[in-house]
Length: 432
Image 1 (tube, rainbow, N blue to C red):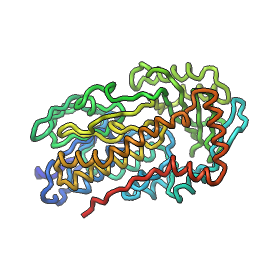
Image 2 (image 1 turned 90 degrees about the vertical axis):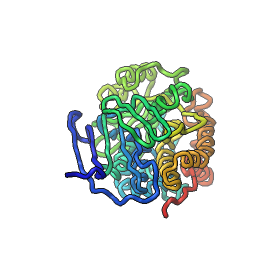
Image 3 (image 1 turned 45 degrees about the vertical axis):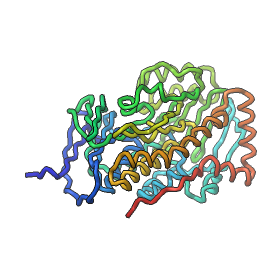
Image 4 (image 1 turned 30 degrees about the vertical axis):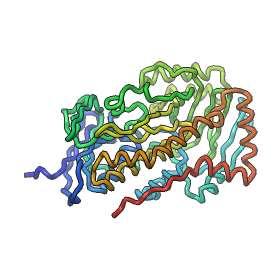
């Protein structure tokens, strides 16, 4: 007979399983540190922040449960340049060996005109030099997979489900789900992204907190695309639009498309056909390889599409509920630090709960006071530099291309590399 204190691990639709499968695993009980309160913690979201939270909470004596609305772990996504504080957290989780094996070498960034003629290049070693080698280019899906592997089979995980409502009192939180039975937890942590169900249930509708920045982004991969440039980012800019591609292993190619939109597109989330229609409309008259890329997007199976937005909140917690990752601190996808900040925020939130022995009022307050000023500054920096990332006018485009040519100068390249990729934040040590 299994004792009540032995945790059960339930994975509904675990990765690489069919949607109707159920897996049950039993873990041996671990020694519970004395003095910790609020052990039972629900984490919503199995992207980057959620599994990172689960990893650190498990390390420090808590009992996390992870719920994810997707039917399996999402392994698609765009290429990210991983450095700075996110690199530091990954190092503390011992993820760097695995990430380095899956990393891609970037020898060059190359801009071409509508006829494919090269107009400027950037040496890929710029970022390695600026970060003293602490820089990895990796697919977001590979990062998510490796983070999740640190807790796979060790905690209760529920796929294909999401939070419907939250009701909290002085002693805990009652949670209703879309599919599972009602449960009670000590704390609920929302790490479920820009369109957070936890934020909606505990704080209010998304429109109260979203700051739309005037762009949309799409990313996808295909197999067999005929144009390949190994170890090179190849990009084409037009006013208000840009396309990038990068050759992956196994004859795959990754694409990222960005276009300006004065108002946020009014399409349902996860409506792939609507996303494809928006891309065809936005890039209908574009040159270079874009007609072939639009053909490829019809065949892809992993299309990611979203508005480029920030989440701005005065408070990241409400009673026994707190938020982290893009649910509360999204800098915007164009700024390129979302995954790094997700890792960092999760580490800090779990660490403050550990330092406060589970006292959520103390932990949530210290987490916000420690990290929010930094995030506020980064969000403002993202807004100020958005014309650099995505020029909307011909003049802005000319200025951007001129600046890229200047980056070839050693001093300029080092300074720009440090500013944009080596973003530092001093991580506290929460170990005993």
